Length: 389
Image (cartoon, rainbow, N blue to C red; front, side, top):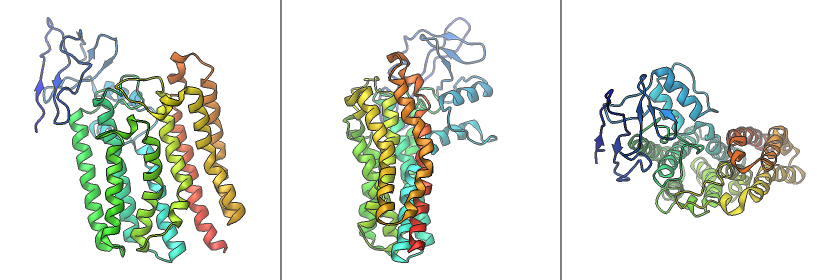
């Protein structure tokens, strides 16, 4: 279904107003941008809305946008923690940023761990099935991130003060986000079909895990939206832990095993920490009828859970070091990145409620960085354990 667009023409005597855009997913994609919203023309082609914010907007092929430098500044303020390489066209940068590549470690490390365990435990070194399984998992993860962006906006959860403002800031239109999600899911399915050709595993076994993972990535915010009923944490734990690790292990080794599920627990807890941190930053945003676990717990108990999620993987590696191999002490080298994160959220508890979000603005990305380093060291530990036997 093609999107219908109504454009309000800019003139010196009539103010610019936001375009009304309908999408195949939602008949009223911009509930906050009604035709009656007061606006005033900006000489450089931007738009100043009633609340004083300024930024680009789109209206089909007749969109009016600020200068390229203005748009670059807008992108930097909307996505302040991920620096894409210079020289990439602005539109492509918007697309790349919308898949949240700074979170890719959440899916890469579990999938890579499955390949490592297949090599060290089963003696299977399958480069082709290993690479395809990792690429498939990352592609489905990217699609899930884009779906999350879309439905968070459609259901009213994303606003100008949200962590992810891809659609709110008009970096991409809702139709562009929906198209990107479909394209990524299609690529994920193509990767899965190629994996069936090179993997020794039974197609039915791989399909069980693949379609379970792809369904979970959509249902996180799509459909019933498990995230909005405080079930997102559990889903993230399962998808970015046992499912992703077992999928790549099965693709390379060709058989099921409980070992990858146990080994994936620290990485699964890291994934939950990443998600819970993002939810804790917007714990006071009770909009759109969404109820996350962080909202149910409140700020203080969310802090307690966040600290637990930060340090539990280290506790697991200490236990593994004492019972299996001292190689698992290696991930403790990343604790220096984790320590300031809990202190940062603890300090935020003492500030007024209206400053809570600003004091934790960069915490989700810092958490992702710390957990990414932990994941690298943990996977290296699994290799070293095998060679120390």
